[in-house]
Image (cartoon, rainbow, N blue to C red):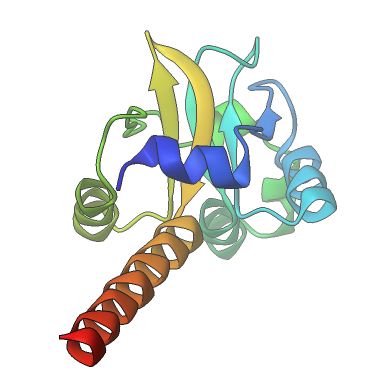
Length: 143
C-alpha cells in the first residue's frame, strides 16, 4: 500500500498558512478546518515550512499569549520531511515514528500535492490488517 492510495481515498486537499500570517491566524484556520497542521506556503505549491498544534503549544508555553502575535515564519518548522505518492505506508510510519511528527506533506516534482496524517496512516494500516484477516478466514474455511 502506498501514499497515493491514501490520497485517492481522503482527497488531496491541503490546508495552508502564509508565512506572514500571525500564529493566531494559523490557529484560527487549524480550528476552522479541524486539522492538526498547516503547510506553510506563500503560493500553496512550494513548501517553506509546517506549523502544527504542538508547535503553537510550545510557543505559548515558552513565550506566553503574546506568542500568538508572532509570525508563522518565526515559529514554523523549516526542515520539513516530505514523501511522494509512491512511498509505502510502512515507510511513512517509519518516518513519522523516528521523526516524532504526525503530518507529512506529499510532493510531486517539488510541489505540494497532499498531506498525510498519522490518523490516515493508522486507518489505512487497520484496513489492510482487516483485509488480510478476512482473506485468512476465507482460506481456512474453504481450505
